Length: 160
Image 1: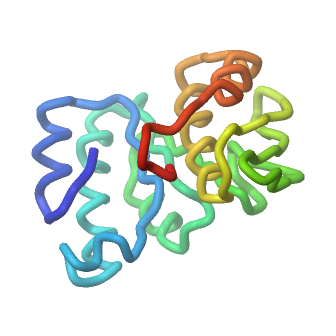
Image 2 (image 1 turned 180 degrees about the horizontal axis):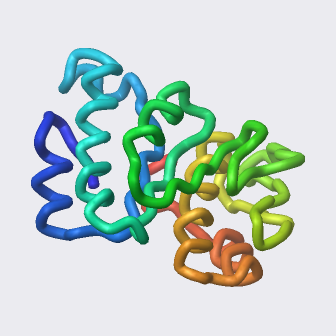
């Protein structure tokens, strides 16, 4: 779900009633709409109370973000982390930039598997890790994730 102001994520989540929610990043790209990173964090955190309605729901957080400990402390549902740095539930090792692609080893509690991501940029490795975290929650095998990521193509005029 995208947002441009406080209250949008809450309204959308009340309609959708998600069982899994991802806060991929808290970044300056929304500062123009909300004024500060703190406001962006609070807008995105609107998802957490809705996920907290059921302790079997899952909140997926970017472990590379300074905001993750605070957001995780608000959760009464399951929390799964992803990230390029150490200590994530779903992580990447041996990241290599290959011109128009990225290669890394996906590391998770279900095992490790080499990934060839057909799009450039470490930020896309992070996006892929978020997607893999959700896929793991849903029981998707690692081999299926690796195959899907190797075939992934960005929409025209998008870089992530």
